[in-house]
Amino acid sequence: MMAEGETEMISGRSFTLIGCLLASMAGPSWADGPAKQRPANPFYAMDTAFQRAGLSTDQQFDLVKELGYAGIAWTETTPAQAVAAAERAEKRGLKIFAIYCQAKAAPDGKLTHSPDLLKLMEALKGRGTIVWLHIGGKGPAFDALTEKTPLVQTLRDLAEVAATNNLRIAVYPHVGEWTAHFGDATKLARAVNHKRFGVTFNLCHCLAMGDEDKIPTLLENAKDVLFTATINGADSGVKGGQWNRLIQTLDKGTFDTRIVLRKLDQIDFRGPIGFQGYGIKGDARSILQPTMDAWRKLSAVAPNDAPRPVKVFILAGQSNMEGQAVVDLDGKNYNDGKGTLKALMNDPQKAPLFKHLKNDKGEWTVRDDVWVRYQREKQPLLAGPLSIGFSIYGGKHHFGPELQFGHVVGDHVRSQVLLIKTAWGGKSLYKDFRPPSSGGEVGPYYKKMLAEVRLALDNLKTDFPGYKDQGYELAGFVWYHGWNDGVDPKKAVPEYEQNLVNLINDVRKDLQAPKLPVVIGELTGPWVQAPGAWATLRKAQANAASRPEFKANVLFVETHDFVRRPEDSPNPGHDHHEFGNAETYFLVGDALGKGMVKLLTPVAK
Image (cartoon, rainbow, N blue to C red; front, side, top):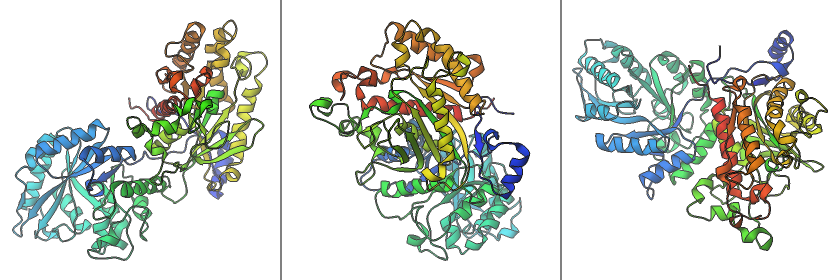
């Protein structure tokens, strides 16, 4: 049974031998049910990876958030300082997943820790933070630990305090300390025997201790007490404290990190995974960016090393969806470049919103984990990784909602994403996209839309060489449209709501995707408050999405607040194209993407 808000994705599988047998029993792959996947593990950055000279704490957290990390791990400070850091992180939507604290074991079995530890846990109450205990000193033999050993009793008492404050405690294995070996830390967690007390797997320290070949077994043995794990790039076969080889950005090193991730998947580990960046040279961005890029690629690979099915999103509509936003054109014909993407990125106040669109070399970002296919009418096919240029005009001077939509959805989805644009200017829902259920002649562009989707899916390997026969899943449909119906207030506008309802139902039926998530983008145009029939059309779009039968899988997204003044835009005379304003199109894509993510995220009852 699906949780409320959970949505259906329709799978097209690659036909291995087992796949062929399953297909022969289940029927056509087009109608297969969703491939079940684990939710993504939250990926956080340890402060060792981003605390670098020249960046304030706020700037560090801004960078962590910008690059897509779920949160941070922090080092023990005073309770007040820890709370201040947590609040700063939370304002940015970041979680403080762990905080690094010191303890010391003695041969007689006693344990000492910071006098502020209890106050720290009380200060962090309710945040779900893991208190990392790296335990130095020389404690008793691990095989000799019992529930009566003094330090075991102390740790169980600490676990009770953690439980009271909705926190957890995890041993942090560290070279040179009593709990240097992950296996020994696991024994300690079992001796404490408290649901709020567990262990952390640290790849770099496990390798340094010479336990590389034991990693799968160690993780298997710890699966019921494992709270979190930290990873990084590293070289294989290295022991001891050669940290320059044992701690690298995640994209580097000869050790295959998939060994760890594969085993974590096999033991159904759902907890957070962190990036250890201690001692890596360079500025914070040069450390965090390649690591996040590598994480996205690694986490998009299934445990058996087979790539996950491609998630396919259909972006349909008319000229607004084609893409009219101006990137960098200027001069008299473009209002001297006002409202272009270039102008926005040169504006100190607005530039932070767009900085992910360029890399450190000043080049337009190219996302290999998001593909775009757009067959323009009577023009060459556009197909490739997401970047600037997938508009009706080709080249690198325009873009559409697909740009930021792709970034938002690409950041959320763990597998490869494909955006299929099926958009043609000047086409109405009343006639051109008219769905079969509306009666009369089926719109030629309704048929063309479905034909383009099927053609794209049939030619995945031809259009995208990176496709590895992993199959696909129809994951969402976006409708951004309305102008050509709005200019016909007597016939088209009164029918728009029902025609849109019919479109959704017919698309789902024809694609054999009965609960395909659908996002309806409000007609933007040149108005914040639309007049007359235009307001009626916007209301019709909202009403269609609010139908009871569409609860939890169709969403209406408002866009009228994104309208910018014509005098601040590159095409002041193009009111039907939102004046070509780059900020408008960026924000529309952002809203559509966030709406889709909302539909893709199950809501528990």
